[in-house]
Amino acid sequence: MSLFLRLLEDEDKGAALAAAVRAIVSGDRDRRIFNASAESFEEIPGAPFSYWVREQIRRLFNGHEGLENGARRVRQGLATADDNRFVRDWWETVVRQPSKQHTAWSPLAKGGSFSPYYADIHLAILWGDQGAQIRAFERAVIRNEDAYFHPGLTWSRRTQSGLALRAMPAGCIFADKGPAAFVPHDDPQTLLVLIAITNSQAFRTLVELQMAFGSYEVGVIQRTPVPDLAELDREFLAALARRAWYLKRKLDTTELTSHAFVLPALLQTEGATLTARLQAWAERVSAAEATLAEIQAEIDERCFDLYGFESEDRAAALGAQSGEAEAEDAGDEDDETGAPSLSVDPSRLAAELVDDPGLDGVVPAERDLVVRIQQVLALVWGAQAAEIEQELCGLLGVRDLRAYLRRPAGFFAEHLARWSKSRRKAPIVWPLSTASGSWTLWIYYPRLTADTLYKAVDRQVSPKISEIETRIAQLLGEQETAEGREASRIANQISTLSELLDELKTMRAELLRVAALPYRPNLDDGVQITAAPLWELFRLPRWRNELQKTWRALEADDYDWAHLARSIWPERVRERCKKDRSIAIAHDLEELYER
Image (tube, rainbow, N blue to C red; front, side, top):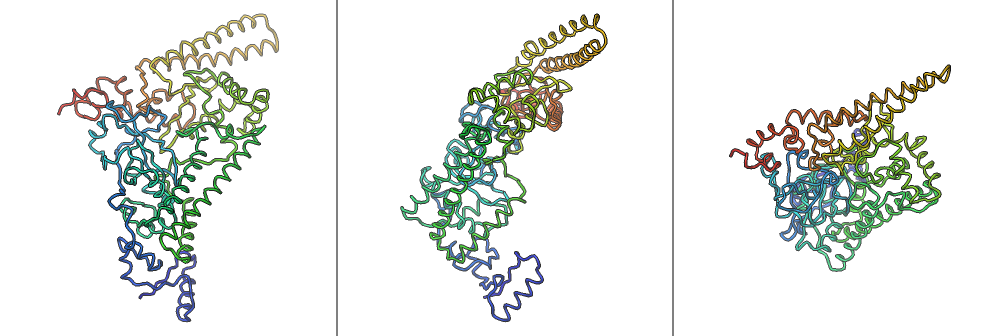
């Protein structure tokens, strides 16, 4: 036996060491002093220096089968080596089940924030024709393809927030950063049992013994022991896991970007005012979190029993859990994106009410968009709609909805943040504005076609120009007979309208220039590339700058795989296809590839 001192939790290491030495000399008990046999460290795979763990815990690695046992499998997934090309947020494109079409996209599990039991699969990967484009891309690595599209459990391989396995539905591909575990015959109850065990503090403790903090590698999960279960234990754990999954998914039905979305939070609660509904939502979230904590406590207690953790081991494991929660706040969010959010922030919840008011293509100016929002409020609140609108503006911190929509840091800034996940910026409502931002055209990304910009000019911009020209002509006529203050007022109006007229003509010229590139949008390119040619018409600086960089990259042939690149620079792309088979496949021009 050897003597070990553990001083990690003490800020004053010198004083802690002195106190521990005194305890050794006097024979007193001290939480920092451990006796362990160095040979017993070999019980744990990799023989970590686990002196602080009781020998009974180390022996679990020999007393139980690992999670990978022949019937159960744990696998690492693919690495595209170019996510910008092959991965999208699901709302950017049309996600379809695997097919022979090389443009088909499939759901992709690729890590995500700390979210045990449930998290929406918000990414999609280009996997048509069995991943033909990715296979032809030299740097891509495709692993364990036989496991694709099976239901399983997935987690973030690298994270500072702790291990959290969540359900991965059938039909998904999984990534290297989002490994997956599978059970025999894809049995649903066995998956539920396994998700309960792997999210227990007992399992997490055994995982942490084998690894450096923050890296949950496949091999570690494979080797971590899983206890043998009686049928009653299986039923008990499966029922708890099912409840946890259901509770988290129900909360996710308020998230606009989730597949589970039904209605915004303030439309899923009752109350005569928005304030009352905010309170009801906060109470619902609090009650759900309390129930989830109770479920987790029950799972932990049963799994401690199954593994044979004594009271001292349980206390140590639960203490480590508290430490992980503290570490999460300071964590490096490497793969931690896209988890369901349980926001109770009033301004955010209010903003979600006006985020996507049913656009059908192109909507001119804020006042027309406001009408749409008001129609929704009237549908829900009837005669109370005007009062609710006032309350809504108060929560948003604006005098009226038009001001909120027009302000660069208002609606679009929040919309951009909400519809951006996994480092992809993918807003679906685009405000194209005049230089001053005084007039805006709203474009709905999912309905974009090659004719959209021409229609916007013909139906919105040009009529607005004619309207202003007519008004200026009327004012010039009135100015001839006006005197004094009235003449000054008319002159100011003419000046203001003339400035707007010049801006609208500039906007029209830019829209026509982009349309004539030719601009043929394709949703498979994703939001950022599709919006890039229009970068000069966006007013939010960080988005405008991002799009300008993307446009420069398009010009420089960095994205010749994009459909937009082919429509604008067809000859350049055809030449590229001769040397790059993956790009040739992307454009259905594989016959050009010079093998």
